[in-house]
Length: 224
Image (tube, rainbow, N blue to C red; front, side):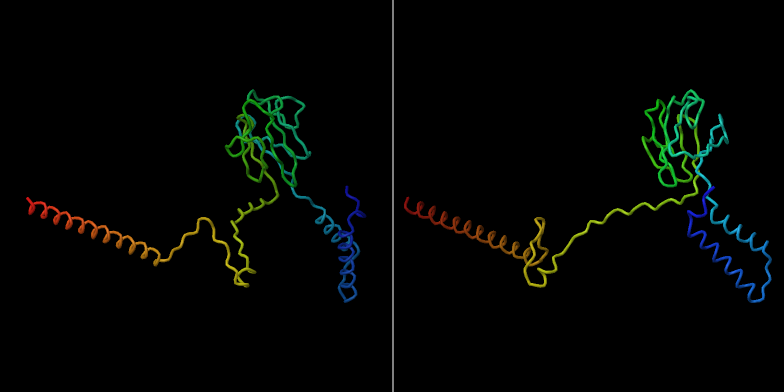
């Protein structure tokens, strides 16, 4: 049993509760010593009451409703008698897996067993268990029960982009990224205009060449 002197906060709460009862008596409320002692003891019991220990309950037909209380920090699972959790089945290896306490829950780790260990249908090497998980050693299925709350999964980190505010304040232009492309419509219009001018120039040169060729042919015919 836990020594009360090792829990100063609990003892201080009990003393405060006793002082409150004394104040009630001083103001005309009657309370006998036996009642005060009973109330004090019930309050002390409520502060020392522990949550239920985690456990594994077999749901397979072979050993249905068999319960294993998880008390030790490390618990071996297997077919041999020296295991903390003995599952007498041909599909279970001699030393199939082990459970290691981590906080209020346990982490299950497969020990290179022949038929493997699964959590909620997925074969695992090591995984932390949470309340309601279904663990399968070979083909023996057990459900994990725990009084601890499931911690929320951390959100993925956002891809943050920083801006140099000092360069903006001083008027110094920031460096453009290598993939930067201008979205200005004037640049596109300028390219279209240049292309049109080149087309007209080539057409004019072709027309001049045709005229010169016609004059040359006419001159040759006139000479003959």
